[in-house]
Image 1 (tube, rainbow, N blue to C red):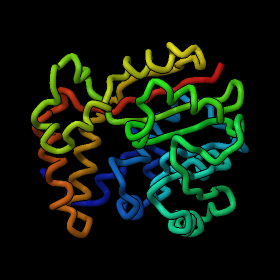
Image 2: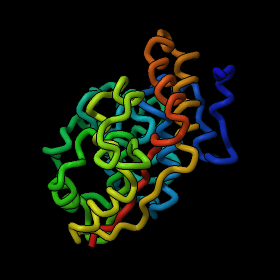
Image 3: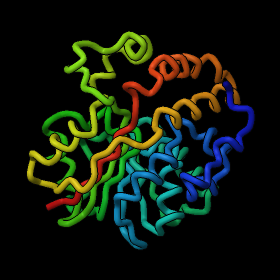
Length: 256
């Protein structure tokens, strides 16, 4: 069944903070499944306080940075490789958070920041593209102050592709080999904890992630220009999966 109204994306029972944002505005910044739902859920496992300096790594068109600034009163550096800083800055200005959010173009393996300059680093639906290498966490934590936090939300599987022996056909048809970066929450827990550089404070699959993802794809298909052609393959993948394998992992840690 297709989404029939943008109001279907307003879900105060599960996401009270995100439900205060205009769904049409959020769809206009779409670069993946509802980022504010993911961030609001992730932030439950973080301790974000007004005045903190936060790196939003892989910030896309800026929805998550707006949310961080408005909801938690933090100062945000919005870093993305593919979205021009001036484009993101316009979003921040329109949202009246231009004084709290700085837009920066940055590649995740060559961050242009001083070490230990952030109280926390947050990454929503981006870490799978740059953060799976064994060496990446030791690199990234250099930019977090001692005792600072790290949190990320990333597409996940309920079982490792290695365990399955191959990428399942209904997933492979859409994303091909990229699904080998969609790890379980427990894979991430070990990957981070084994470095002894952080204490993993939470590693879990998001409750209802498959349904949330499908609802978002249906909304995009209905309410975006050319949305059907772009999102129908995603809908087909999620429908075929039925919640068996696909999810989102929410991982948080504190730097030792």
